[in-house]
Image 1 (tube, rainbow, N blue to C red):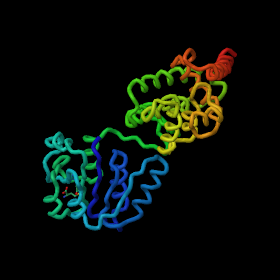
Image 2: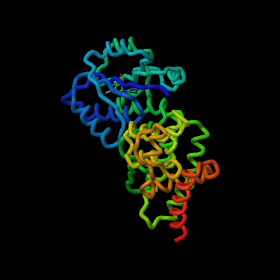
Image 3: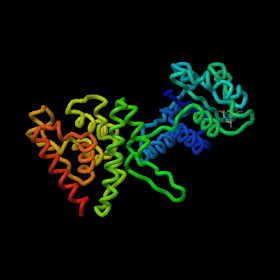
Length: 321
Ligand code: SAM
């Protein structure tokens, strides 16, 4: 996907705090990586850091003391948004051929040099309006909605507000694709999700977190983007932690193998020496569902089969109650 940066010109600290913050929030929400702010104002970056802390991601605001130099050194396509430019609809297909785009928006008066240095001067209607609106419309026409990790996820509601710590289904699937998890593994993970969720719903009296089960089931094999060997569960848990997803999810990934692995078995296999047994009910459900979907029973060595059977007895007796 195209990488976007934004250059916000002419910020006047005395007057533009709110509008420049909105330019930054629009840039972040539509998937830009950073915003260069002409004129230093750390109130804007502080606000963005606060939003990152709550909702994830690592969008940043950097000072750009010389905006023309910033444009010169940008190695990609520079698009200046201005009411005097050509209609974006006319040029969007051309612009989208770029791998990297710098979207430039102004404030009051934009220097002539910006028009000359831009590869494209584009308009969103030929009427004067706002840098916030122009940027949002431009980014919406070139970007897919991004996702963020390391924060809360809003769960869209018809009315009211809802948020979850765990990434929703679509985000999990995008993570798997972005990490290069093979299609066959994604298909398998969807089946594990389906079974784990239906077990979770039947065991609702245990006060389970279905969002956690869903995300854990979908991500349990993420490490298979790096290895199909036994160590995939260690690699997957590491990836989950690196993305700053909740630790409960990393533990589901780390404890999903068969019915679990003891410290001795782990060290014999050359893995970090600790126990990897599923402990919480969410961890047990994902591990059990994976065993069933994969139909591992026949292929497993006797010691592994014993542990899988023990886990199966535990879950099945709860289901029978
Ligand atoms: N005369 C300015 C212009 O060149 O568009 C309007 C100044 S407006 C207060 C601040 C910024 O909003 C502009 O620098 C431009 O980036 C953006 N903007 C306003 N109207 C726009 C339009 N119709 N199309 C694209 N960008 C617009």
